[in-house]
Length: 224
Ligand SMILES: Nc1ncnc2c1ncn2[C@@H]1O[C@H](COP(=O)(O)OP(=O)(O)OP(=O)(O)O)[C@@H](O)[C@H]1O
Ligand SMILES: [Mg+2]
Image (cartoon, rainbow, N blue to C red; front, side):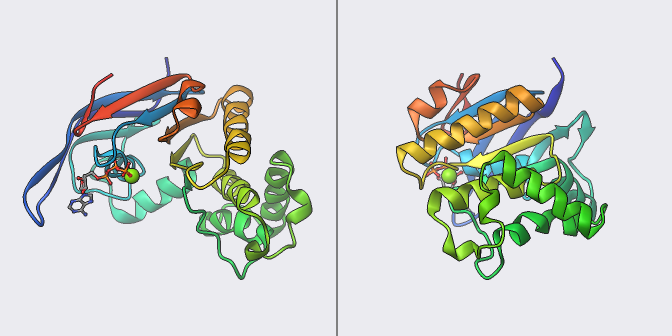
């Protein structure tokens, strides 16, 4: 199996307000095309782990690999490049720029990457919107679309640079069951049709049951 993401003995400590061993010997991998979910009680360390895996937190022990490349210890600029190019994020709250149109929001990470012309980026962004069946919203301001639509815009934005993996921290946590199912189906389609890997933190047992694998965390460890 080809690993897209892999950790070796990741440990993390918070020093304040009191010393706290928050992540303990985290060893696991996500394979190409695999749709994995992470579950576990509130406070067990899921978001802390995702923060490290997404290269935003560099204060940990152990090693992180993306596409067999060692990420740990790379400098800030390179990390930011890797993040933008290879990782897509979807959070519980969408963090769209409300004054910008849907299309502009989706284009943003590609503009930042600056590997394509504006025309190409706009074309790609429209393709993603079509894939998510929201192309009719392209010119609307992000503040003017519904919660479920916003989340699909956020997914389109996460996909714009054709990442190897999508990471999500409760991406359906703020959605009703119909919209949550929509998001699940979109993720599933992406993993099957495009070989995209997904690693999604969720509290929704129904959502998790439908994924390829549930990674269960407890007290800072992976327990199954
Ligand atoms: N910056 C921080 N400094 C100190 N402790 C922190 C910090 N961030 C989180 N923690 C603690 O680390 C533990 C893990 O937090 P984390 O946010 O990763 O949990 P979680 O599994 O995502 O929970 P939830 O399901 O509620 O989102 C918790 O006990 C939390 O209080
Ligand atoms: Mg969390």
